[in-house]
Image (tube, rainbow, N blue to C red; front, side):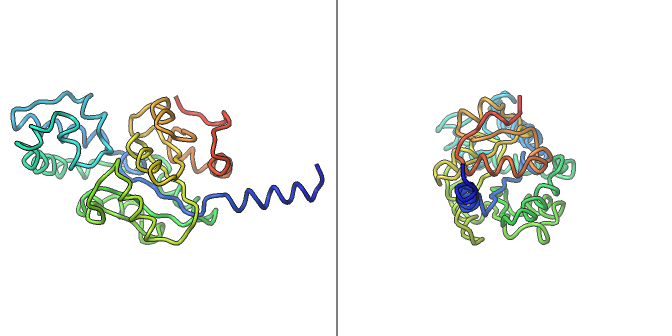
Length: 245
């Protein structure tokens, strides 16, 4: 291959590399999915409609407006949904100070900025719950914008939250970073590729089946391998180089 052809290929790849990172918070940058699971379980128990922890965990990452019906049924949502959500909030409020950033969370945001990507944090948390991770992440310094549940009427897996996130930054080619199949589904609706992380408790197989183009253990690994993973995203396929159980 001639040097001209190589240069053309490099320029073409550069044009296709993402210029925006849409990054989920809970489960991806904040170790909070199991706190949410326990809070929901306690809320359901309090209304005498117990739901197993394992079943609730399968729905973490989905918006709270959808979770009650998804984990139980429409009748329970109609009869108890608002009460369960109120109780979940009370329970999570008691645990929120126990949540911690995932390994490498701040470093990942710095790595994106160093690679020239604009960063928008796509949280579906209520504003008062989002305040803690935004503070821990120094989001004012490390992100170009963020969302909370107040920014969208429909939660994940609906794509509205990601669409609202993208409106907050300039860029043509985005990559989603998320820990749940609901993140992947929402991004797929926007035709945005996702790199999945395992810190939310979903398996690599589940994330790949949902459509993730690559899966890594955590934010720290993603930051270390950022150039490689951005090329995989640009190519639109996983070339077998990614890790993750």
